[in-house]
Length: 380
Image (cartoon, rainbow, N blue to C red; front, side, top):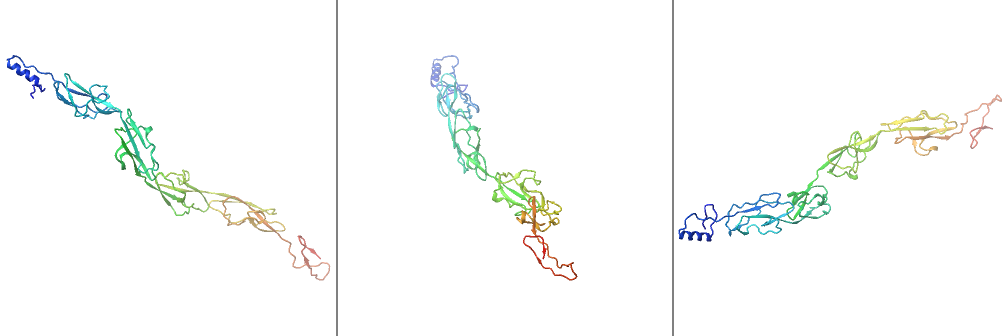
């Protein structure tokens, strides 16, 4: 088929007209048939470029319809083809279709249709089932949206590191604001949590082992069975574990969350105990009547001088009256203030070794009888 100078193709009818004119010797220029173009309209697209057809067509020619070569996108809608009017709801042409050219330029408009995509969530071994397990993204929405996302899953010993289009953190990461372009399964991606050391420093105390160490996964706790035995420090009271060596930080116990390597310190409380000595009727009380035992000491050491009471023998100090309770000595360890009581035992006067009679010049031997329940002795 011939072309005229502008490049437009000449129809068979037009060629016959030219031949007839030449046969009769028609003078003047040869008439040229008009040509037409096909343009593409994005019809409200938010992204992409329209295709470009650089051809010129004569009426009656067929043009090959182009596809969405410029990746046109209208958020919330799906490209479904081309239509001859901007308000078309169904595509008249798809890529590769033939369109007959009329006696005018042609414009093809992108046709945007509704969609409904299913997004499913695979927990990949999460501690609990994912809820919801799937959501629908339908026009005009084009993202999942924060309110529709499932709660962040958990898995023991692992961090949740997002949702991906392939297992193992492969493919693309998808968030609540990612554009959804089709049905998709999203896979939870898990990464190992780090393990931290918690070191227990007894601070001069003796423990199960000095600087006892427990390894804990981040976000975990030291279980009750994993704590060291309470340390001991002579003269002080163990008051728990603390994040500060001075005991002014946060208390550390079974509910404390571990977020990194850390050292925990024993807290030691000093004491000041008062021992009160109750003479229980002593005529000469103990002196001093009270003694103070302060850290690091735990015993009184030397007791006060024994009290005195006429007709009684002092038998020691006891935690109960009348010799009841525990005997208290200078080496008794204290854990609190205490009152101790003198224990007395009744005694009779001893018989003299000899007696001299004054009535006469001779010496008289005397016999002694001790009456029951009596503190006096009668000479007979």
